Amino acid sequence: MIPNGKLLPAVMLSGMIVLSGGCTLNKMVKMAKKQELTVTPNPLEVHADQVKFNMTATLPVKMLKKKTTYTGNVGYKYGDKRDDVGQVVFNAADYPNAKKEQPKITKDFSFAYQEAMRKGELVMQGTAAKGKKSKTTPEVTVAPGIITTSRLYKEPNLVAYAETGYTTEPEYEPTNVAFFFPQGSAQLQTSETRSKRGKFFDNFIAEKNVTKTVTITGTHSPEGAERVNSKLSENRAESIQKYYRNKMKVYNYKNAADSVEFVLKPVIQDWAQLKDTLAATTLLTEEQKTEVLGIIDAGGEFEEQEDQLHRLAYYRTLLNQVYPKLRTAQTEILTLIPKKPDSEISVLARQMAEGRADSANMLNEKEILHAATLTPDLEEKAGIYQAAMKQYGETSWKPHNDFAAVQLEMAKKANDAAKKTQLADEALNHLQMAVKLQETAEVYNNMAVAYTMKGDREQAMQALTKAAGMTGGEQVTKMINAAKGVQQIRAAQYSEAVSTLSQAGDTSVVLYNRGLAQILAGQADAALTTLTEATSKDANDADAFYLMAIAAARAKNEQGVMTNLQQAIQKNAELRARAIDDLEFRAYTTSEAFKNAIR
Image (cartoon, rainbow, N blue to C red; front, side, top):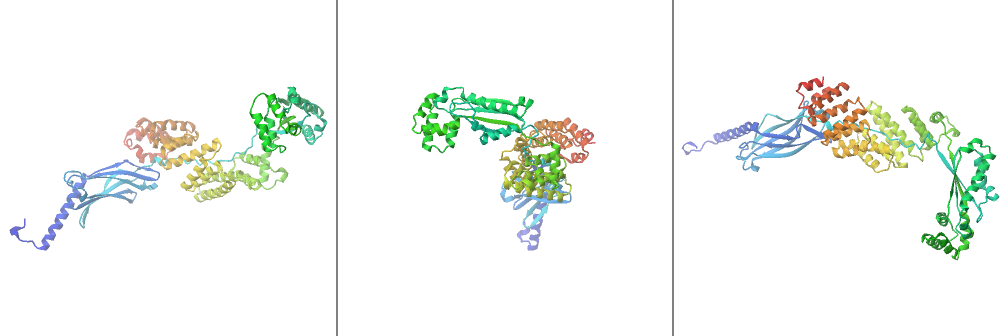
């Protein structure tokens, strides 16, 4: 009340308003100590290079006064830095029941992760305001730093070489010669043995090629006189066998003749050869061919079908000009392909790499690609692939791809970042040349490796997607899945990564990454099984034991945490410092068992 009903001077009235506003703000700041702040997850976690969390802020009843606002300024402190993350703003006008009900806000936040942020804390400082006046609360810690388990993946960076197509196993190549017989006869004519085909056959036998099998397929034409003699096809095959054996005696094969296996295949009452001959001949019109095929395809007894053919107006053409091509003995000879020993291939490859080989000593593409596999030295491999590119690179993608693969292998070993990038760029140049010649899973897999080395995750994923859509060998498919699984981990697609990595083979690195994906997908028990298998393949992988400790912590298996941490630190002492700060182990860090485990 104003005494005596008099008005106070304006100066005094203004002072009272300021005092009243200041008192209000002081009360709000004091009551802010009772605010409730809940963060999920707590501790914070990084996934796909982002730290995302949900915060619920609840104010005490009666804290939010009329015409006031209360702003919670959220930040992340690390080292000597504080990055603003966002705000929660309580406007009194939005909470008319603030005297009876607690004002509450739930909001999602996110910020980009940097490596320096691992050790830090999420903080909030409140600001109470009324009009132009404001007062801040002390800063409070809302959540500790960041769990970075999702970043513990291992880049497989597996490079794919092209299949050389070369094998050291015995290989055989076929040589085919056909001999023709008169109608109804199995007698090999002199005109046949003296023909170009006969002379080639004779010269081939004279060369004494190492021969595995001689397969002779005797056939007959379907006209009446032929079908009477059911032995005709077999007799024709036997006639060629006899001729071949006589020639081996002439050329003094001696014991080598005994190693040649003859396989006789008489073909009797079979329309397949006639169909093939009809398809190739120009002696009949398309309508006539269709009519003949209609009789054959209608089925029935062989002789009945032949009788129908015999009644055709153009049967003479069939008999005199088509059927003679069916009276044959087709001979296929499988001979051993001569091969150079690996020692000779290596010497010739070096000569080609040094520019010392003449055309007579050039290796074919399969041989030179094989030569590169015979040396572990990356520089020597690169030289051989350069020679292969010079000789075969205009038409074949393989030398370009394989040279690029070597450059990527060198990049993996390079300690200098600039050198690593240079090698990756050089590899990409050759991979672009390869892909212009032929798009293959191997080329796109290697592109993904190169882009990963350069830190271009988007391009790497595009290349992997293309590689995955192509048919490759079993090994390259596993490589693609190994790389794709890691990309999925980086993108926080953990369930997908588990599935992909399950199809990537069982190397220690693949198993490690699969175990990590299982941890992040909430499959801690499965992760322990997978990582146990990984350590059985590489008992010195300290990182795998460290992941097992994390999986055990998430499964609330204290003994598993201590046992695996101890193993990890024994194998790599640098993991001690990480374990001390790792919030995965926050429930154990004060225990004596933890202190003993990390000694």
